[in-house]
Amino acid sequence: MPEPGNGGTVPDPVQRFPFRPLLLLPILAMAIGYFVASGRSGRSGEDVTREFEVMRTRARLFIPAGSGSSLAPSELADLAEAAIREIDRLMSPVGEDSDIRRLNSISSGVWIEVHPLTWRVVMEALRWHRLTGGAFDPTIGPVKRLFKFDRSEDGAWPDAGALADAKKRVGAQKLLFDREGMRLSWAQNGMSLDLGAIAKGFSVDRAADVLRDKGVRNAIIDVGGELFLMGMKPGDPPSAWRTGIRHPREGDILETLELSDRAVATSGDYENYFIHNGERHEHIIDPRSGLPLSKGIASVTVVHPGSCLAADAAATAFSVLGPEQTGEFIKNQSLGLFSRGIQAIIVSIEPAGGFSRREYSLDDKGALRTEESRIGENP
Image (cartoon, rainbow, N blue to C red; front, side, top):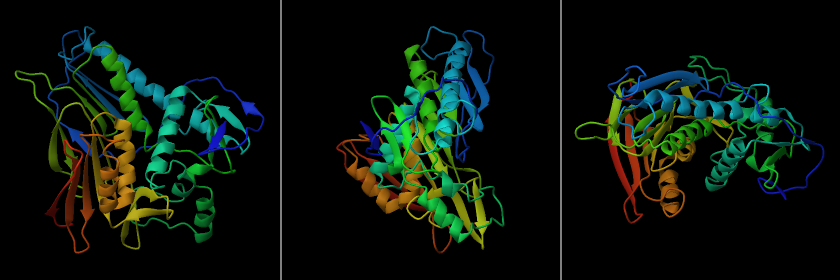
């Protein structure tokens, strides 16, 4: 039976489309850097670093000679890149045969079938909407398009009437779905789905799955700053991978994390923002108010033990929820969504100037741990 975010009847006609290549996903702020001394060519037995443009951002793969697979690093990089590009083809907001483009072009009452991978990500996006009480909403596009996040010093504020009209066309509960047929439809005209806050993370997970299937134990997958750090950095002895969190204003490395078999994602106002009446607004819209975030949080970095999709979605949701609600969310999900190993590092803008750092994590018994510190003055 079809469901709106929960349910509804199945109207006709049902549109079916073949699955063909498409284009690019929206870029999010790249806030994570990692440090790998490599870059050699792709011959068997040598490390490979592969860089390419995808999803309107830059992706980077690092496959060491000691990956654990019998395949050459260059062959493994080919497979991982193909997996990432497949997600781009299926979930871009543009492109002639994109599932998302097709969904966004139909009127209410029309149903389309989507690829199983698209279906999986859409269901995850709806789950995050429910889990966060609407703080994560993949239908925020009509509002987001009214704002221009281009690092402008004089960003225009949309007309109040246009903003009110756009807010009426937001709400994940208005996305109808039919589980049996993996079909999607809209309860209202003018809606649109944007998977930009979750699809990059999923593409990283897909590439990691492909590499694991080929026996890879050690590698780095990076799509626009959303990372999976597989295994260890080969050496004598092997060591954890190192990744750095950028300072939200100064551009240098705020802190370094040493991680193994962890996904990492960051959201923040590093690059996509605008300034209106002297106030900085970041690219993340609070679906509950329909307004871009400002003043409170400069960045959120999430480390997840198994899923870059979850880290990606959580980084966006936690930016909207804020530090206190994020702590409660992690605590309440300790036995379910996250299990053990979750970390959330939130850099907040202090009212009197400067920044503060708050970290939430779960210990082995699922108890919430919180650390707080000051990290400098606001330039």
